Image 1: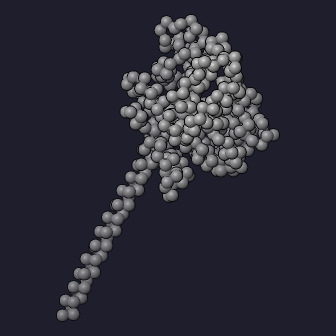
Image 2 (image 1 turned 180 degrees about the vertical axis):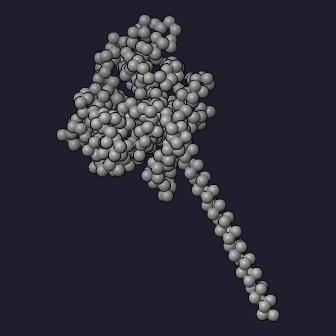
Amino acid sequence: MNKIKRRLEGSCWNSRLRLFVVLLFVSCLTFMAYHQEVNKTFISGTDSIFPLIIHTQENYSVEDVINIRRKRVNDVCARVRSVSKKTTEVSGIMAANLSYCIVQKAGCTMWIRLFKFMEGQNNETGNPMTLTKYMIHNEKMQYYKKFRQTGDDTSFFSHSVRAMTVRNPYTRLWSAFIDKFLLPGFWLTKGKHIIRMIRENPKPLSAKCGHDVTFPEFIQYVITIGHRFTSWNLDKHWLPASDICDPCFFNPHIIGKQESFMEDMKYTLKHVKLDYLLPKIMSIDPTEFEIKDEIDYSFQIFSRVKTCIDIYELCKRIWTAFIFNGYLPSEVAFPTNIDKNSLNIDSFYELVKGVRTKYNITKADVKVKRKHALVAAYKQISEKSMNNLKRLYKMDFELFGYEPEPEFLDE
């Protein structure tokens, strides 16, 4: 009897043990599946989820997101080995052990502002935000230090904290068009070249000034040039980021994104012990600062193109750029009955300020208006050209986790 009892007890114990093992195995599988799904969401999702995760998921810090981006780049680089083997422009702050690979139209003006300030430009003010866009790109360039990955800078490169910022290729192209062709930045150089190369039978003023490049013409030019690096065609404002700064070659520790620029910049500055600059940077309203800075820059370079357009046309174009960027309401056109002789940098700013105050444009409004302008711009682009863009920026999409077929194209 005792023998039978012991057998029954043993059988019960074995059943419980088997049940425990099965439950443990199922739990492990469930956890692994969940963990893989989270990683899949982070790594293969669109960029817009990154700021969302930073703000809403306590378990994922900015550092977590930076690490996920770096892992994605490392995984792609392990597969492709390299993209362009180029770092066309690297700056940084040697005293802070920071090297930074410049990608134009991805926060580069802000970073170059900090680099030039730390090298001495306007350093006496104690505030990097006293450096305007014009001062950054046109004055005292001796304060803009550039480094090479070979020669005397090799040791600095290998031991420095390496950082870069990237951007969605579609918004980067649209931003480049606004900044360089709607506004007069590149009219007399790339603008003239695009018109002569793309447009059939251009008018004499267009060929002379390059002032009326359209967005479809710009996109056609970008596709035609492709990945080519030549003295005339090379422009880092729209070449793929991985052509300008191959992350497989540069091997960055920190990959920031334009879409989460402030969070990523704060993280980088703290990482290299330059966060004492943050109070000055954060003390300004970024939208108001950009509005003033763009007005100042456009008026500063107006003398270069005043044989092509008058002051009224300049102000009208800045106004349009501000509508595209969401700073002004699209329903308010630039006044047609204004006295041209009264237009100057101060009066134009007051005009912009007055409309913004009247309509009380919020951050949410800016986001909606920017998206609307982006959608309208790409609606002009043919399906064939969109497919060509997807191929041209293929490695940027893969390396940096951007969606090659964004939702806005279906709207």
